Image 1: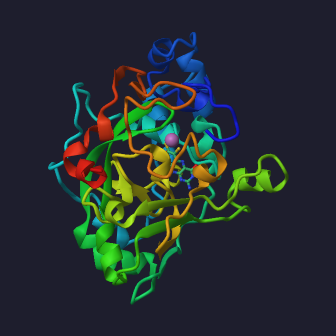
Image 2: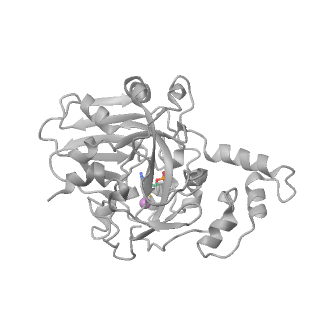
Image 3: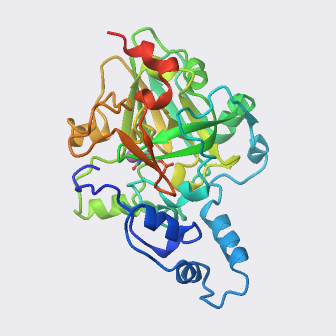
Length: 342
Ligand SMILES: Nc1nc2c(c(=O)[nH]1)N[C@H]1C(S)=C(S)[C@@H](COP(=O)(O)O)O[C@H]1N2
Ligand SMILES: [Mo]
């Protein structure tokens, strides 16, 4: 993405996700072979002589997927009740993406190496935390973690959505969260509020990607910021997401609170949100400000509109790399196509 030229798909063979069936993954993506056992040993610190590799893999998984929020009584809100009204659409019968998603992340505040985000984010403090909701509303409010769970914890659901990155990889994961419209209604938006802006935390001391850019590596306009139209933000599909796989979000997935907008490319689903602002005029976004022709404000998933540098017709599932057809609106047209009728 962005100024860095993006190679597609960008998979660096690193030991960190060796607990996956890495060889299969690598073969599928045409990147040669790598030793699974050596990789696992490097991670678990026990080398090839690991007496019980499955236990090592298990411990590794626990470390990788460590929830950001762990204290009582918040954790009692997990797992949330399942909502199967929105099963992931499409023509392929995969099960949910196995935990692979936690070692393949985009979160540029930490690093541009997808396989390493989870590790760079391990020291990121997510409790205490607050989301300030401000701008064109009658009741601007700063919601702390406890406020959010007290007000909306009971409204949490688990939904498995298809998730599609603009880089043409995709996953199916069960998110936990509640509809963003509930939070927005709580601040009583004014009628002039036509757009919603979102901002990620900006904490260079704990975000090495930002620190590196402050030292002159890239001219990214931190903090990361995104935007939606008001009607997109109010749509039933749009989640303020608090968890994945039935537990609070791990840091690499955007703990403690991130957006999920399943019919748009992944960069719209902004992570670790600290501020939401209701505005009248169409705002710009982080990626749009860098490359408007590649990452426009709307950015709905659309197979017939290629990215300037690659086709969007096919996507590849992590972790296998299995191809499948991209669907218009990522398969969610019945819920959102009406928003875009001209
Ligand atoms: N703050 C912030 N949010 C972000 C990003 C980011 O770099 N910073 N990357 C985006 C992109 S490009 C994608 S594909 C998704 C990835 O979410 P995941 O790591 O939970 O799969 O997060 C999005 N949200
Ligand atoms: Mo993405």
